[in-house]
Image (cartoon, rainbow over all chains, first blue to last red; front, top):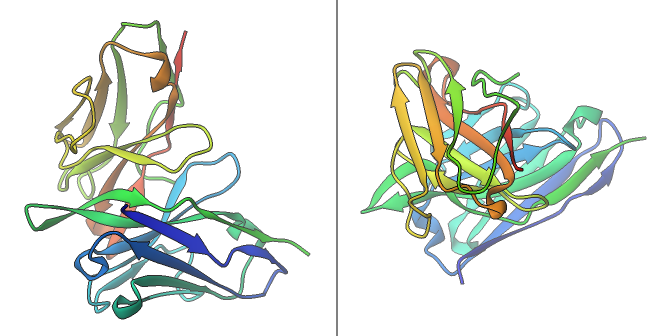
Length: 123
Length: 111
C-alpha cells in the first residue's frame, strides 16, 4: 500500500544534530514533490520545507533556514532532513508528506503522510 | 506565528452544520488555493479539501470548502461524532519566497 515511514528521531542535546529519513513505498516516489512538517507538543502544524521531484527547487520556513537541509534520493525512494544547531523549540513530531497529483498536475495538498517521528531537544 | 487565522474552537450537535473560517491576506488565500486538513487525535493529518473546494476521492461530500477574497471556509454538514478533530486550513504564501502556511487550527467538538 501507499505509505511513508519516517525514522531517525530521538533525544538530542541543544546544539546537536539529527538526520531524519522518510521512506516511500507503494507509489512512484520520483513523481511527487515532498514536504516536511512538524507539530510541537500540544501545538498546531508548522510547515518546514519543500523539495521538488528532482530536488532542484527547495524552500524552507524562516524558523529552520540555515539550520535544516532537505534532500532526496529518488533511486532509494527516500527523503531526508538534516537538522543542525538544534534548539529546545525544535522539539516536535516530524512528519514527511507527499504532494498529491491529480490528472498529472501537482497541487500543494499533502495526501499521504508518515506516522511521524519524535525529536526531543533537551539537556 | 501563523498568518492564517482560525477560531480556536467550534461545536455542534450530531446532524448539525458547522462552519470553520480561515482568514488570510492577499499574498496567501487571496492569490492561491486553500487546503483543509483534518487531524484526529493521535494521528497524522488527512487532506479534506484541495484547490479551495475540491474533495479528494474518499472524502465524504459532507465536507465542503469555499473561498472569497482573502478568507476561506470549511463546512461540515450532518455532523457526526467521528468528525471530532482538529481542522487546519493551509495555503501557499507568495510573500515569503516560497512558503506554505498552516492556519492556527480549530478544534471541533461534537456535543
